[in-house]
Amino acid sequence: VVNASPDLRQQILDNGALHPRRGKRDSPIAAVLLTNGDVDHIAGLLSLREGHRFAVYATRRVLGILQENSIFNVLDPALVDRRPIDLGRGFAVTDADGQPTGIHAEPFAVPGKVALFREDPGAGPGYGTEPEDTIGLALAAGGPAAFYVPGCAEVRPDLATRLRGAPLLLFDGTLWRDDEMILAGVGRKTGRRMGHVSMSGPEGSLARLAGLGIGRRIFVHLNNSNPALLADSPERAAVTAAGWEVAEDGMRIAL
Amino acid sequence: VVNASPDLRQQILDNGALHPRRGKRDSPIAAVLLTNGDVDHIAGLLSLREGHRFAVYATRRVLGILQENSIFNVLDPALVDRRPIDLGRGFAVTDADGQPTGIHAEPFAVPGKVALFREDPGAGPGYGTEPEDTIGLALAAGGPAAFYVPGCAEVRPDLATRLRGAPLLLFDGTLWRDDEMILAGVGRKTGRRMGHVSMSGPEGSLARLAGLGIGRRIFVHLNNSNPALLADSPERAAVTAAGWEVAEDGMRIAL
Image (cartoon, rainbow over all chains, first blue to last red; front, side):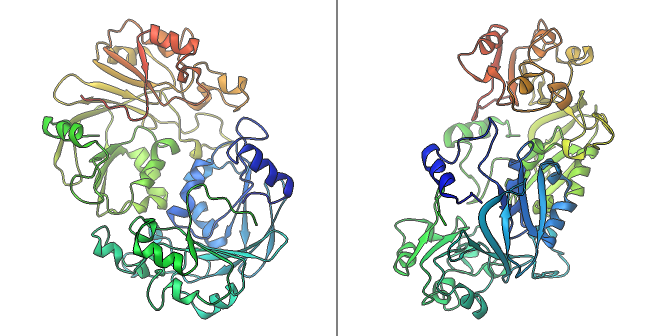
C-alpha cells in the first residue's frame, strides 16, 4: 500500500518509487494487506526482513499461518506489527507507527481454498477451507472503492453485485481455461482445484463480470501458462475486446 | 549441484544452464545442499516448488527447521526427498531418483550461529548454537575436493588446516570490516554478531587464509554494504592483490 496523499504521490513521480526517502534502507511500503496464506502471497514478506518497519494486515486464519511458521520471525515483532482484520469490517490502513496512509480497506470473503501447503492429502481438496482463507479487498482513498481480488474460485452473484459500478477492479487472471496446465503438460491440476476461476467460458470471469459498469478492469496473478499473457495471442485480443487490461510489472495505480 | 559428467557439462555449454532439457518445467538442479537454516539459505526453496523433483541434503538441525515450518510443504514430499547428513561423513550426492550426480560431498562444522528467526531474544547471541547450525562442504567430482563455506564466524586453525592446498575455495565474504553496517548507518549488528568473519583485519579471512596454497579463492555471500563489491574500490584492489576473486551472478564453476 503506497500512501495516496498528493504530496507523496508527487514524491513518487519525482523520485521513482524505488528510491529510499528517509534513510539508506527505507522503503515506500507502509503496510501489507494479505488476501491469502498461500506461498505466492506470503513468501515475499521474507524479502522485506530486518529493520524495515511496516504493518501486516490479514485475517486471523492467515496470521495463524505466519505464526506457526517460525521463518516469519525474520520480521522483527518490534518493527512489524501484525494486525488481524475482520470480514465485513472496514478500517483505516495505518503504518507501523499508527500514522494514516490515507487508504481505507474493507475485507470480504471470496470462494477460495486452504493454502496448498496446509492441505490434508487424505481429506481431499477443499478440506478445512474457511471464509478467512481467501479474501477480496475494497480499497478507497477518499473516493469510491477500488477492488483487489487476486484469487477467486468462482464469480457468484453476491460478488458481482458488490463490484457493480466500481471505478477499478484488479482480478484473478490465473488461467485462460480450467484445464490449460494439463493440456500444456505443465501440471496436473485444474484451475478449479487450485481455487482459481478461469477467464474464458460461460462461468468465466470475462462473462460473469461483464455488464456491471466497472470502470477499469485489470487481470493480475496470471500463470505463465495463460496465453492472454502474449500480446499477440487471440486470447489477449479477446481480453482487450472485452474491455480488460493485463497487468504488467512496474504498473502504477493511483486511487 | 550441477552434474559434473563431461556429457552434461557439454550440454550446459551447448544449451545454457537455464534451458529445460527434459520437459517444459525441467530444471538442471538435481540436488540442494543446505549449509545453514537462515532465511537467505532456505527461502530460495520456496521458488522451486510444485512438480520439481530434486533432493535436499542438510543436517538434522536444519531439516528440523524445514519440518517445523509448514510452508516448506510446498515441496511435495513425493517429489522432493529430504536427506539428513552427518558431520564428517562423506556421501555421494544423488538426485531424487537416487541416480549419481558425480559429486561427492563431506560436511564439516564451522563456527556459526543459530538461525536469526530462531534466536531467543532473552538468551543473548549464540543461544542454542550447535555444530549442525552452520557447516562447510568439501565437494569433489573425481578430483581433489573444492570447499564451499558461505558462512563462517571465525577462521580457526582446524579450518585453515582443512583448506590447505585445496584447488578451489568459495568463502564467506559478507563484510569487509566487522562494524561496517553500523558505520554506514544501515544496521545495528556487527559481523561477529551475525556469525560472519570479516575480510579485513588480523583475524580476517584475507589474513587467516593466506599462505595455504589454495588454488582459486572466491568470496561469496557479500553483503551490499561491503565496499569490495565495487570494482573500483581500494578494498576490491586489496582483495585482488591478495589473490582472491569476488563472485558474480551467473558465474559457472566446473569441478
